[in-house]
View 1: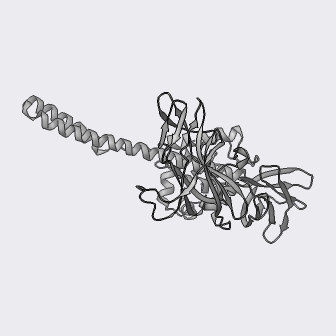
View 2: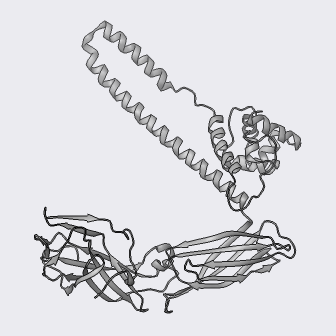
View 3: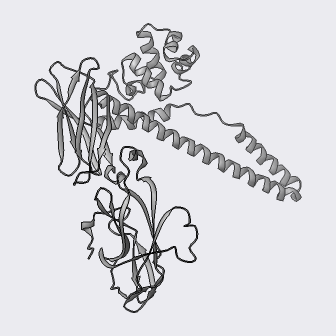
Length: 429
């Protein structure tokens, strides 16, 4: 059976006319007619609406499944059968789409080729102009092909995301859920506290069912709170679930059936919350101002700038935190994460432009010889303490010094890409 035949079969089983089915989907009778005659293919949103209306799965409508049964919940993970079904749905959807008619441009291209052949036979003097014209048309055709390829790629990506969202919704234990950060505090010794409110509406509620909300901050700190069931909303909820602030926090819920069966699903994952609470700084150094010697180098007019930026990192979370500022700052040169020398604060150096606006502080490295052995990794870093007493290290990418060839090479250290690291990973004296 084709897709159109399956739609027609289910429409007739439910006693609907083409016009009545169109009214339910917000479409015209002609659109339903085109589907059932396989002249057009429903969009993915309409396929989902049809599957719900007919009580069958999208896979059955597309011919992926033999029996018209709705997909059943199998837990939070997709089964192998579901993954195969997604792939088959995408392939079947793309295959079933009506092919575009041959464009007038293709016919015109053939006419041009015949015309050029005639011109070549009639008079060789017109070849140059015709070839230039053909080159322009070929370039336009290549552009059109690239545009079509991009459009198809975007459509396939969009279709894959939609199918994935549909399957995730079908697999979810809940009809609705939500998590909200309601309060943060940075005053505690361990770096801060974050408090959440959460709720979840089970798709199927059984009398006697209970729930537990589980908050895990990735460091062994796990908070478990029983959920309150509200019959008015059919939702389990938990207020003021608290944990120590870290950069990896997961909030999950476990449903417990009357017979003791437990099902757990992740509600929300937060990455980078602790980093979002730190002062926002930008460190820039100028390591090219080094005089390389046979056994190392000597900084000469080597300056470092530290810019205090408004707001905090990861603006999506920044509104949830009180403002943090850098109260104490020390900038230094480090070799393999061990202090070589602290830099001294100074005024804006002569010749530096564009630093008049903004909150900049400059530092100058001492002009003292620094030994550099093969494999040594150097970096400029700032030890920063905020008003809550939290200390952190901000650093740039590291660099190595080739004393034989007098070359400075920038490289990516083990902690490349991190905006900050804990002071206990550095030797500060």
